[in-house]
Amino acid sequence: MNHTAVEEKIPVEKQAGEVAKDQRSFIETLRRTGDVVTVDREVHWDLELGAISRRATEMDGPAIVFKNITDYPGQSIFVNPISTWRRAAVTLGLPAHAKISEIYAEYIRKDTNAIPPVEVKDAVCRDVIVRGKDVDVTNLATPMIHAGDGGRYLGTWCIVVSKDPDTGWMNWGTYRFMIHNTQYLSGWPFPPSHCGTILQQKYVPQNKPMPLAIIMGADQSSHLAATSTTRIGRDEASLAGGLAGRPIEIARCLDSDLTFPACAEVVLEGEILPDQIAHEGPYGEYPGYRSGEMGAGILMKVNTIAHRKNPTLSMDCTGFKDCSSIVAALGGGVGIQRTLERAGVPVTGVYVPSEGAVHLCVVGVSKGGREVTEKVLHALTGRRTYMTKILVCDDDIDIFNLNEVIHAWATRCHSERGIIIKHVEGSAQALTPAYSQEERARRAGASAAFDVTFPPEWDRLETPVRATFDKMFPEEVQKKVLDNWKSYGL
Amino acid sequence: MEYQTHARHMNDIQENKTLALTIRDLSPGKHKYTARVARVQLSRSLEALAKWDKLWVHSVVGIKDPQPWGMKIVEELGITVPGKPYSDIYEVLAKM
Image 1 (cartoon, each protein chain N blue to C red):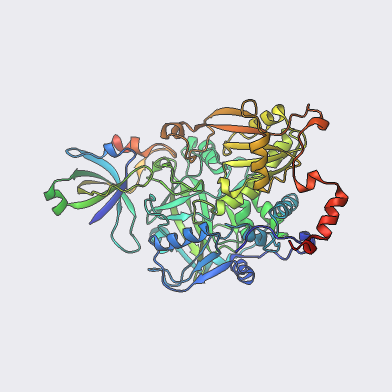
Image 2: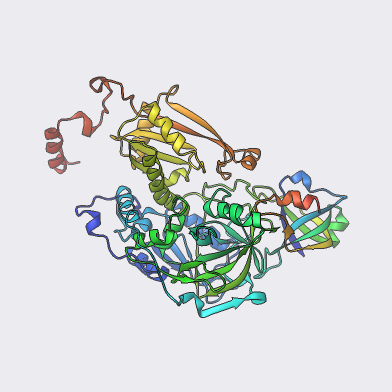
């Protein structure tokens, strides 16, 4: 299946359809576009399901609904909801074949039109409610995804809800959580993440447990919002409404005032303990490696589980080209663009290609040069340093076309004065495979910015011109050739 | 019974001393991979491998040592251990 762009004659925004209101209707939409397969034969949760899903991911294959899981009759798992650009397009209500640039444009359009949520009394997940001593998280179909992982990861494509007790800000994020024992999950929200920051600043010093909810199987607008790179204080539920084009219905937890998408299939409620820990990790993660980050996580005691009668859990089969790569490319890319705009960078666009596993970012600028490249590097190495390779390109390059980007990088970046490296301490992503175990422990690392622009002080009349069809020929010649293309027998 | 654990350094797993470890139960079924903390004695003697439980050790990146250890549980230490979020569980276990 070709997941890249095909030419559109009608502007995509005029074709945008309705955004699916919940996970089940999203699956039906994918069925119509040919982007989901249902597996009816029995599949074991212990590695077989993960192996199928991983191979499908690497083949740019469809999403999968596993309907018959060993030990878990009646439960299903929906795997890789948004691990391709086609499914990202469908998530936003676009045709599945929309171009990447059009998907970005639609995301930006929706991102700027946030719609606050509306609270409802009932949530569909309350067909079955299990509380207190009866809680056993192993009753939820949870795969052992990769051989050698620390345990069974239940939180992969999930919305983790936490709250700042001082400001009241509710954070929706996506963080990994694994089963430790029947009533405990251990997790690893990156310590400088919003959830990690709230926990460490607002609860641990007071030795107070932090209420937490983990949501699976919600509408994809809410999942997409939870994965977005937003500033502290921004309401992800409103962003989800913007992405959906209508208010998201939210419901309140049974044990706390946390709120979550009311259409969710499964909700786990509990608290992060301020004084107890358990082993967490390692785990095959979105950079495409199992890098060895383990043993320094957080512990959730699960007090309540609520789910639909025959729930469909959600899962990201993490690794190379997983959902994280696509959603980080989208929400993260737009977040980076906003950051650069605030920093005064003349940014024209940002692309985080999924092949770069959230380590590589391409920034288009209307005016380049070393000074601008340094400004970009500084802006992207603040609280979190996820991007370890940053390519700053002139805006005559289509940043969404990796062929053009690689060509420009290879030819315009001066190997001596075009590379700027910044060392970071305390903000590096510990999952970056290139870092040593010791660097990971310190969250130390580096980011390199590549100035892929011609110096702005160069005389335009003496600046090299690309030897390409669109740059080397007069417009009338281009038009004539294009009009007659088929007649040449090409 | 068979169990598994993950070691930060494979050399930390040694004979002739007791160790506090997070061990995961490998018995088939829904509760496979559930964990608890125990003080254990390890040995690769033929007798221990024949008579004691088996422990499979994985490295920090999840690579499995193909040779198991014989493991005897000396003391059950509970499901969780004291510590602040994000603190290093290996340092805590080393002091138990």
